[in-house]
Each structure stands twice: as structure tokens, then as C-alpha cells.
Length: 130
Image (cartoon, rainbow, N blue to C red):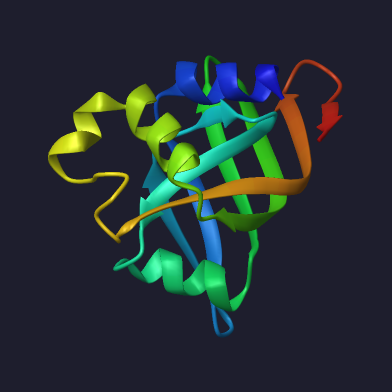
């Protein structure tokens, strides 16, 4: 899991894919943190992505850097604990101008049953499950 987090942070931006009905939706994300032994991402409850995750928690994320890419498939599970929201925002203080752990909008999800696949054109894929 730490290797996945390191790749996501080094890439800077990853793309989160969700589903809205039968239509895939992909958008850039940048938050990722390990808290309480789980990998978390963050969004706002007012966003369409939040509604999509609640309707269908299966998602994938993808990142690319230096000729290598990472795909992670997982189920996203909301963690409504204040401590989880605070841990995320403490890791990304620049988000505090838009979010607060107590604003009723900040939402964090951890990845459950995650399968991460590191790939490149020159090496065999490496799979990590967590």
C-alpha cells in the first residue's frame, strides 16, 4: 500500500473513474493518504463524483509517471470519522481554504479490496492487493 501511495504522490495527479448509470466518468484527483492502515482519497459531498461513488462504490484510479503506470481497482468506502477527514486535510493543508473536517462537505473514502497493478512497456506487471 505504501508503494501505491508513493507512486500517486510522485505522479502528482491521478485519474479516478466512476460510473454514472451506464456512463463512465473520469476526472483528475490529487489527494491520497494512509490513515489507520488504509489508503484514503478525498472529495466534497456536493460534487457529482460523490453521488456516483455512493450509487456504485466500484472505482478505478490510474496514474502515469516516467514510462510507468499504476491502475488500482477497489471499492470506495466512506469513513465519516472526523479523525479521518482531519488526517487528510492535515496532509494537504492547501485544501483548507476550500474544505474543513467540520464543514459537512468534506468526505473521505478508503479503498477496500484493492488490486494495484504497476505496469510498463519493459517489465512484467507487479500486483499488490490490500
